[in-house]
Length: 432
Image (tube, rainbow, N blue to C red; front, side, top):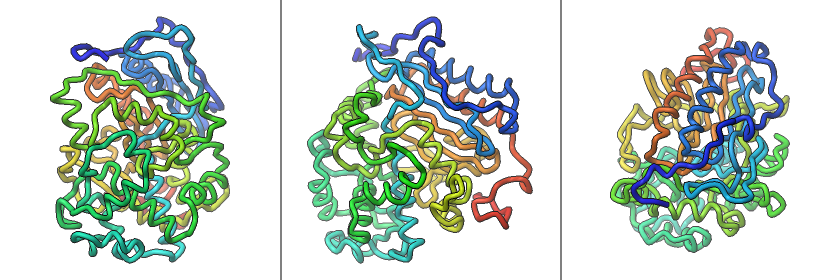
């Protein structure tokens, strides 16, 4: 990767040669027009043409109907160094690592345990994991971790690939860690730390491996062949590889990523392309799936916990999980204004992480430029996955335009006609 370069990938003149579609329905079935769909997809193509993403996989549902389910680009073989001799064109079924968008899935597993009566979100973590009480963390609650106020935003040791492959070692470090702030006092995004503790909590309470718990309660009933932590060996020949792209000022990008993740850009890329990462469990960052399968998860939440007639979780659970825990505040890790619920990131008005006028939207970002969310006001669920790990690059205006076009071309639905997160007998959807 060149230090002083835009580090862009090869982009063919005819994007149709690298574009695949699957199972799309006519726009009018989702209350949209062909022109509105075209406007959104054209913005995605324009983003791809910046050369910052070897692959973009995109799924949009409106009113429960798949209106866009497309991939554009290469699963592997296209990087800032050019096109390989045997590049592999992606499909809409290509597995992609969700990175931090995995966090909302782990959070919802925690909420499901609360729904089952197995835990209480206001209980101290040490009630379930006694070792966690060390060094001033005895009163830190599950609520604190879900809302990024747990006081342990970073792994305070050198982060290496080998460390991230060794879950038990990270857990022992976190048990002994001294919090950098009192639990509940400061908002600071917990990039990987909270995930490991929440994952361990699930296993101690259920007696099940967290992969098995996710499979039993979400992956299997929603008929998703791969929607889990890591990736089964039989799917690894198809997995999309991640590539560093974009401008890479070491005193900028790497300094920021070290602050957030404890490691630089190349570390994040190398880890997720390593089969050992696909073997292990990282509850905060290693669910591998397709855009359409990720979209099913958000569609289920948008539908009050039900998918294709199957009850996955109660509407009350979905509603509680998406309630704001605070107003927009400066996140001390991300160094940006953020708004969180108990697991999900929330949109904002007049502008938020999911685009303009998205005050009702909830979802999560993934490193980098991965966005998955649902917006009850527009009755849409979106999964936008990419494999170009570009933090600063020529893509930023085009990405902002994608979010703008989604908001603009998916008009808000009158409140009385919306689906409700709180069940079919209520029109309550106000999350602000």
